[in-house]
Length: 118
Length: 117
Image (cartoon, rainbow over the protein chains, first blue to last red):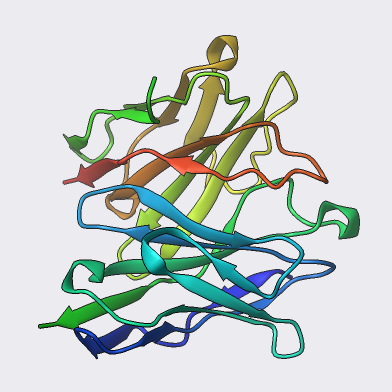
């Protein structure tokens, strides 16, 4: 079965400090990995994705994520957090259809609330 | 349109009533998805439309839920005989054609917040 785990319900960071939001996954075949952000009363906004290639993926708003196949992880990172980064972050995976994965729908983690304090 | 549009943004209904939620995807996107976001449950896949293919209904929680997509564009999610546990935010997303080699991104609407009293 395919699944995504975000082990932290909430991450608290001081403005200017680096932040990490953790994600691990379980999927057959090659994973297609995504991070989305959700601001209050808004839909999900795409941040970045990993399909193939470099393990370090750079995305919107200065975020990046590192794909680690051996640890089946795809942690989201930012070198210097901003108060405006405070939001709900979702990690998601789309299975590899060549291994009987989903037809394209994303499997989401439960989300991690990021709180950046001034 | 510029983005995925969903209506209404909020819907309050009484238990047992039927509701219809609408999604207007990004122009040219052939794939359309419905998800449900419940408090503390993350996002749950409901149904997926791809072009003229039969929809993937594997995520629908019960036969009270149904969806259609007319003309390959606008989609309506219908919940019959609503129950209090149906209260959630219903999110719609669209993307270009999905396939084994596709890497396309799903773009989400702002959602419809459904409250069943």
